[in-house]
Length: 260
Image (cartoon, rainbow, N blue to C red; front, side, top):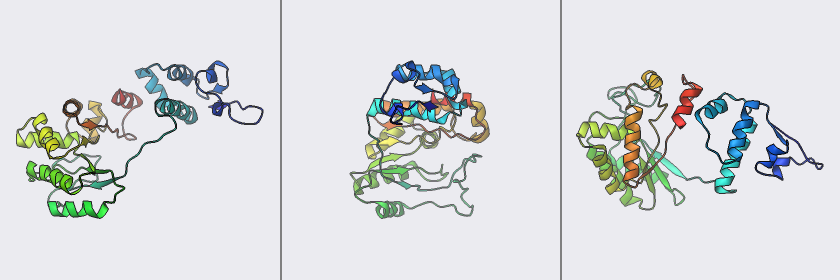
């Protein structure tokens, strides 16, 4: 991307905003494929699948960054939001054997661990200050821990740190709890919410494309179940987000499909 400067050498985009940059020819892209996308972005139009693929394949990072920041400022002004969190991983013991994972361990493997509840509470206390706004809690799919362990973990943390938001358990974990307890996904989420759960993290989404999941995480739930867990969480008033694992065997089309 090149931005033509004014007489004082100030980049034009610092003084003008919106469609005028393109209509006056002051904003020029190194990648011409981005020009129709920019017209949509600056005009407030929704992007299509092919637009996403073009963005992924473009090397004009300055132009993409400009367009992304334009949308950000249009939505939020000159503000950036963040939280201060602490991670708690109660166990790394996991029945799955996903190729992408360096965290999980089999029960008898070196480095395998499972925290007692008091140990988890103590760890939370060591990392807590008044600035902490969130505990982020995820772990392995333990073959022996009862579901009540996770309910008691959430309840105990909420009792000890009532002002801290609890974001806990990926859709993969929720699906696993449902499988081993024979309770529905809704029942699992209801019990956790009653104990103090505030939201779900976005882990386990990886890439939704089935062909990719079969290679990198074939032991995890599929995209349909992942989305079902999050839809149910939203119906219960819980918030959530979604992550994307990229930079492995996925294509630009896979990544775009994941986002849409």
